[in-house]
Every structure is written in structure tokens, then in C-alpha cells.
Length: 517
Ligand SMILES: [Zn+2]
Image (tube, rainbow, N blue to C red; front, side, top):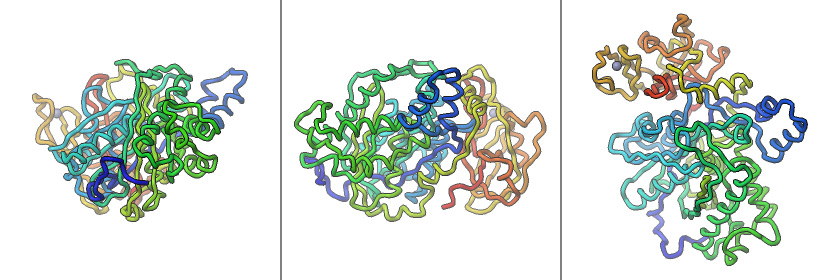
């Protein structure tokens, strides 16, 4: 395929992906399990279950546990992208996070990620809203900053831990996940050849200020989705007169379920394509049944995770890049309700060969799965929605660890106000807090010595004294995994919050080693 007409760029000027990473929470629940509990008494339950499983293609949902939120999973995805690129995080001068589940309505998720991943202070930070399209909007924003010479490296992230009303179709589909692309100009794994937008004021889904859940018009989304996905592809085809959709080696459309992208495919596989706005490009939209089987179906990650919203398209592209070879072309059409699509053309570059051994693949995250039961699922949901609670309450596990190499990280504890500062600073946020402050050092790779039996009052709430006494909090693990000698890695997690309107306290916790490289 030839480059963009009229704006053909020199090879070395191309902007693209220099590192990518995802994060999918370890905890999953079978969609069927939720449906059975929510639809008790429904006469056509078996038919309904078949529709969810085989029609919508929803099998599992990924769930953020008490210690996770949009910021923590965005941080893990960004860490993976930085490790793959093997660059100093201080070189990254822009971070954009696309999300519809910001932990703070005012308070930048992007700055949290920048700080937690070791970036410097002269960094542009932006949180971007655009429903499920926000992740690719972040990619477009950072790409433009690099193209125009504002920054050399920037991080674009899609991350969501989205909520849905119970017994709503959204509850059966909403998952949790994050995808991050570190963009730059050198040693590209894939170049961004073009991004073609299509948007209109088609409000199929929305969430009003201060409301915990979105609302939607149900099946209206099918029309909004289909027309906008096709509209963006038409714009891409108009920009590239010799391009056909079937020329692409890999194709992914936003995955709110398995049904929606396959519905578009089915439409494009018909003899007479009846949708779209531009008859002049219609013939070039066509896909064959073989295209759909080979180029679209293998990347339906949604079966294992549910809809990861703003992360969905970045995770699908990452799954493709895990398999792609130099010279291949990827088409990814993201979609956000309201409604907005971007058709992105990526060209896989030689740098992809270096990807092998650079951290976990999407499949590794999908395989790392722990099934939770319905009561646990309900308790996670209610924790996100209940707003009157004073503190983050959940069973805490603490351990004594020793340094197993790879350097260290410094954390500041304020014993006066029970807060953790990571990265460290020289005083408490609260100007009249008298502390005392205490700096501790934690290993980047740890080995468990023993699990600590916490006193009753520390078993469910965060207490900075646990860390002061030299112990660490351990997450994402079952007791049988925590044998002495097991290796642990630090992950940034939510430790506490201060009422419904106070600060959220984040800091390093440990989990059984998952990212070995
Ligand atoms: Zn303090």
C-alpha cells in the first residue's frame, strides 16, 4: 500500500509505536454466572444464556479488585511499554490517558502514571474523554505532538474500570483493562501511516456528571456503531485511492462484544453493501468470509475480558503486534459512543523482531486468570459505588521480604496522617501536618521470607505502620502461592482513600512475580 497522498512523509520522519504494553486484571468471572444470578426466574433463561454466549460472544469479564483502578492498570500497561522500548522514562515528555472512569473528576490520571513510571516534571499531561474511543484519541494527540516536533517520545494510554447498572446488558459486557503505546520516531515496531476520523452527534450512550452509571438506548448503538465504523473506513479509503479494506493483513473493530465487530463484517461481506455514505468507495469496503475468519476473528479479545472500553482497541492492536511480521498492515477502527470513530492504519516495521522476550504478551495476561465467585464480584461492584465509606476496607495480606536484586525504590511515609508518598517528596501535602515523615527503601525484586500475622485492627484497613515496621502489602495472591522463597514484584496499587471526597492513596504493593523480563 502506498503512503498518504499529498502528505507523503520521509521514512525517517514517521511516527509510530516504539513499545507497547497491556494490563488485564487477574480476576475474572464467567459472564454466564452473572446472568444466571441476575436473571433468576426468567422463563427463557437458557435461550438468553445462549444469546449472551454465542450471539454476543461474551464468556468472561475481567474485574478490578479492591487494590486496582483505572490509574493502577494504566500504570502497569505503561511500565510494560517502557520496558519493551528500553528507554529512560525521563525521555518521555507527554502522557495522555483516554478513559471514562477517572478516579478523580478533577485530578490527572496521566500525571499519576507519569510519576509512578519515573518520568520527569517537564511533561505534558492530559486526560482525554471520548467514551471507548478515548484511547485512540490519546494516540492521535501524542502522535501529533511528536510529528510537529513538540516532544520526541510520548505515552498514549486507554484504561477503564467501567461500571454498569445491575441487570443491564452493560453489566454482562463491562470488563477492565489498559493498553499503552509508547510513541516515537526511532526503532519503530509499527509506524502509524494514517488516522481517519468520523464523528457526529449521535448520542447512543452517555453518563451525566456525578452519575455512577451510564445510560443508553440499547439497540440504537448497533446503528451508531455500524454507521460510524464504516464512515471512518470510507474516509481512509478516500484518502488512499488505491487501498482496499481486504488488503490489510489484520483487521480489528472496537469490541464492546463479539457481536458488534462481526455484525460490521457481515454487512461488508454481502453482495450488495447497503450501508455507508459514499458510493464511490463502496466496492473497496468489501470483505470475504475468509478475510473475516483469518483477519478479524483471531483478535476478538473481548471473549476473555469483556468490553475494556477505552483500552479495547489498544489491547487488540497489541495482540496483533504480538504475532505480526515486518511489512504487514493493520487496520484498527476504534469507536466511542456519542459517537466517534478513528480508522487507524499501522504498518509493521523491522523493529517488531526485537519484541520477542520483551515482557508479557496479551495472551500471557489472558492466561493469568483467577475465577472469582458471584459474592466476591458483588462486593467489588458495591465498593466502587458506595460513596459514604471513610476508608478502603478489604482483607490485607502483609509479608516480610528480602531484596532479590534489580535495585530499589524509595517511599515516603507520613506517620502523622497515615499517607504514603511515591515518588518521594520532601514534605506532607497537608501544610500543617507535623508528621513525622519516614523514608523507606523497597526492593525492585523481592523474595518472601514469611507472611506476617497482622493484629486485628490492621487486618482490613491500611496502616502506614505496617510498612514502617518493614513489611510490605501483598496483592493478587492466594495463600498457597505465598510460600517462603517465592519471588515477588512491586506493582502500584490503591492502598486507601480518605472518605468519598478525599485523597486516594497509592503506593507499591507486591505480587507473585509475573513480568520476568
Ligand atoms: Zn502528613
